[in-house]
Image (tube, rainbow, N blue to C red; front, top):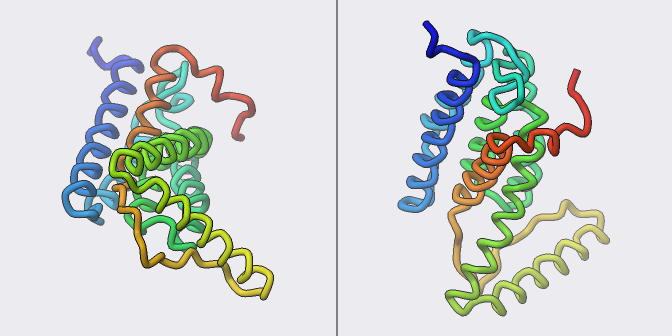
Length: 204
């Protein structure tokens, strides 16, 4: 079947990942919650697609195709490992961490590093825009100073740093928006032919 080319297969997988991210974002916006069924099912789907589809260098690469189950598992694990400390610091919800791990299962360990970098950039910009729009930027800045100071003193006392909740909250931004935007930026740049920007080193 001529339509089952590597490019069309990769486009279909990317579209599926984007659909999962839109569903997760919508749920996070409406209920501040990302369903476990979505992230667990999506992670298993990412692993299965990377296991059974024809092999290549990844669905967003110049040679589109599956990475294999081992690299997909590495991607899931790396996404989890990078984000888990933020969850332990109470800086990110468990659903957000699992969503990033799901993306790693689709895109692999190399891509998830860049997705997280774009996600952090998008999250910071969104937070600034949100607080400026709601008039709570100064409150957010004070909260950030308070949390960083508390973390410093806990570290000085050899206690585990925890970003405790502040009494005067500046509001809550559904972080799935930033995660989705970070992924879309990565996939968009790859689709536009800027894949070489992401390949400073190779995974073996």
